[in-house]
Length: 250
Image 1 (cartoon, helix red, strand yellow):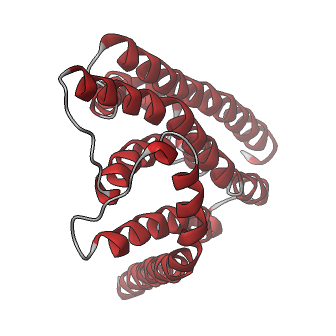
Image 2: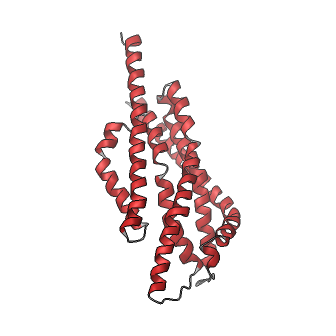
Image 3: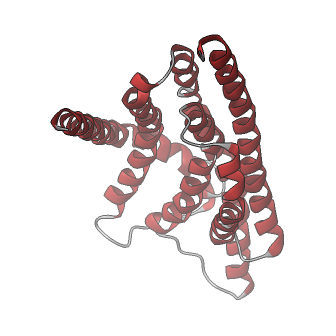
C-alpha cells in the first residue's frame, strides 16, 4: 500500500515538474517574442487594412500592451509543441515502442496547423469582419479614429480562437494514439462540440448569416476530419491488439 502511494506521489511530482517546465518555456518564449514583436508589428501596419489607418494611442500603456499581445502569440507557437512533448514524455512509460514513435511524429505538425489557422483567420475571417464593421461605421456617418489597442485586440480576438481550433486534428490524433480519446467518445461529444464551434464562429464574425456560415462550416468540417483521423488510428490499434492477443494471449 505504501509502495503504491509512493508511486502515485512520484507521478504527481513528475506531472508538477513538467507543468513547471511548460510555464518556464512560455515565459522565456514571451520574452523572446517581445523583442521579435517589432518586426511583426511593422508588417501588419504596412499592409491593408492597417496601412490605411492613422494610428493613435489612448493610453500610455497601449504600446506595451500591443507588444505583449504579439509576444503571447509567438510564445504559443513555441509552447504548443513543447506542451504536447511533455504530455508524451509523461505517458511514454505506458506506451508500446511503436506507439511512442508514432505519437512523437505528430508534435512538429502542431506548428504547421497553428500557422495555417493564423493565415485562415487573418486573410479571410479578420479582413471580412473588419470590412463589415468599417462599412457599418461609414454608413451611419462615423469618423473612424482607431487606437492601436482597439485594432489589434479586435484582430487577436479573431486570430487566437481559430488558430487554436486548427490544432484540433493533430491533438485528436495525438490523444487517440495515447488511447485517451476514441472515435465513439468523439461521436458522443459531437452535438456539444458543434454547439461550441457555432458559438465561437458567431462570436468572432460579423453579425450576418453569410459570415457566420463561412466560418462555422470549416470549423465543423475540421471536427469531422478529426473524428475520421481518430477512427483510422483506432482501427489500427484494435488490429494490433488483436494480433498481440493471438500471439501472446495464452
